[in-house]
Image 1 (cartoon, rainbow, N blue to C red):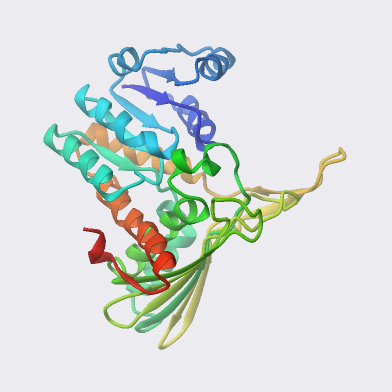
Image 2 (image 1 turned 135 degrees about the vertical axis):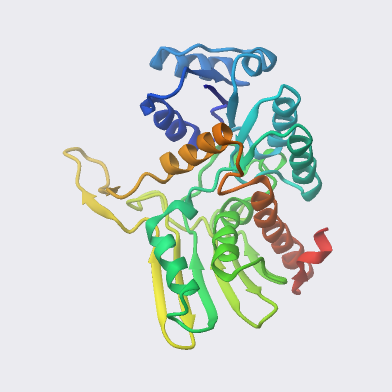
Length: 327
């Protein structure tokens, strides 16, 4: 099996490349990038083939990871589907509901695997929390307090025409996906407050969402880019679940040690836990080989995207928004 990595616009591409290079069951890893200079530099550093033409890349691989700017996911995924190539698409899966639906339909028509890059469901901490809730140990879940706070990433993330939004679309989708898995389905309503008070730019840097389920369960999510540059890690993903019979917490990146470099640079947290990217990519590759759905499908990506888009509508209206309005 030959796997392509297409675009290094997204920071996660470098982590995915390291995962692919550590696998011994692939027949090759090929690099493509709309920025030829960047792509060549990465390919040369790892002694990998660089293919500047998308058609050439797709013609030589069985599956491809798409790590471009958000707005480019649709066009790239449709090209992959047309070429008969399975795909793992970086989150958010797209910047509109219609684009995500078009991508899903294209892969379904051709019997191809379309996966969304959601590594968090593979976290042992989340899996343990999910088992605790499903086993009834907490009783009926009443509320969840969740966070996905990080540093402002720069790059295309703060170019609205390429990202589709700021902190809300970047950080909401991960936790929206986790909450859907934890509570058995997506929320019915979303209320959001978004702000620009940290960087004072057109893109939002902070957001607080309140999500409501049909049975009265609600969740809050802080999805802000509120970590300063000096913070010892990029951010966090946490969930605090309140049930009728007990509470439970999950800190998905809590396995860490504080590292103090022998240099004039800030200390940083070094994670020592499970490599979630490796588990996610392994699941996708095995799904392609076995012809089964991946743990995080295109439909899962669409479900999470709707929550983020509903948050923007809610913030503009100053009122809760039903997810049904986005259909």
